[in-house]
Amino acid sequence: MKVKKYWLLAPIIVIALILFGCDSDNSEDNSEEAARLEKERQNEEKIQELCSKYNAVTDWKQRFQKKTLGQHTYTVEVEDALIRADSRPILFYGVADDIVKETDKYIVYWSGGSYVDATFDRVFGRYFRFVLDCTPSQVEKIMGKSVSFFEHYAIIAQISEVEKVRFRLYSGESVEEVQLETADAFLAKGKCLDLLFVPDKWTDEQKNK
Image (tube, rainbow, N blue to C red; front, side):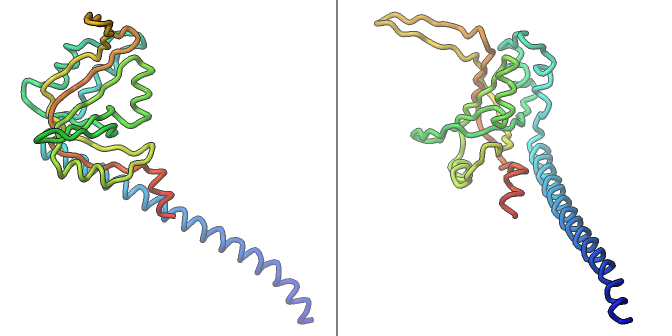
């Protein structure tokens, strides 16, 4: 009689263990998702604080995003967006492509946006690059951080000059200037006021596992 009772209880125990295991997995997944969302919220909060500190313009790209594929963006439009009459700096997201040391300063070359954003801009016929004077502490911060493919920085920049990228062909003593026709590529020069590292969500999750 006791043996029969054990056989009856066995399936119930197995089902309970399965359900408990599923609940445990779901609980763990929910905890990881909550932690990820909290970290994302904290990053957004830090960026907002940075923008508020410098009264930075965050929506300067909107006017260009309204343009259709193949529609040109003009230098004067980019100047109006980046070099403002009210002297407010801008916020942009970028990847440091190169760092050059000059006599009394560092110059950092930035791709505008993350690698994904930059590729998207190229497809739609516009591309922004930034050349900014940076302090030694800012350069130290950049060089001290190993950045993955999807990671980037939030940069507050005071822009003072904008030009359209052109190629020059040299033949002996003559110089022929050729303007790009296939893309609107712009070079914005100025000063880096501040920057903040923005980790990639997927990469950061993998590091924590």
